[in-house]
Length: 114
Length: 115
Image 1: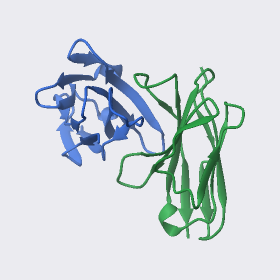
Image 2 (image 1 turned 45 degrees about the vertical axis):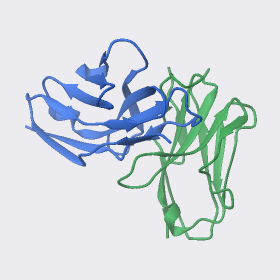
Image 3 (image 1 turned 120 degrees about the vertical axis):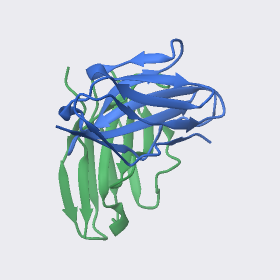
Image 4 (image 1 turned 90 degrees about the vertical axis):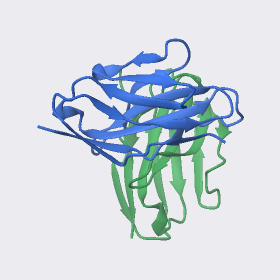
């Protein structure tokens, strides 16, 4: 079974530039998550989708971050404009419908904002 | 609000010795509890979970965890550590009945198994 795919794996940008990350979840998983993991911390949920609808985006900085999952499969997370404090690893995960089901994580995208 | 604490940033253990990685949680109702492991430059991998039932949960790679409701703990254990177990371990919690829909992660514990 293929895992969660993410691209790119690494990205370096200047502050105020924009960047986009892509995620393709495990086939059959209706729930998709985007997390931000800052060095030395645990992952923090940015947004959770159930199919193509948003379930939870309470911690998403909506003035600069956006995400979509138009066809209920793959998803894109965008940052515009980026700030220095956005430097982190962005993890995508998927699962069968929560709350008891475990999440499967992709390898992440390491973003460096200079 | 739900929260999880991993009181040790770093745990060192000799190969072949038992290991314990500690986790305590706080929820308003009953918890779903999870352990994940993260190797360098990799995403998180699921190890085990407690949903309901037997307090001792067995998971991947010989790991197990014991749910203790009175102490609100869910410590990760392994009888005999391997050098390959060296990694970053995260505990996570979700409240069964609370309004929070998300999984809350601890800050992680770096496990180093010394040969």
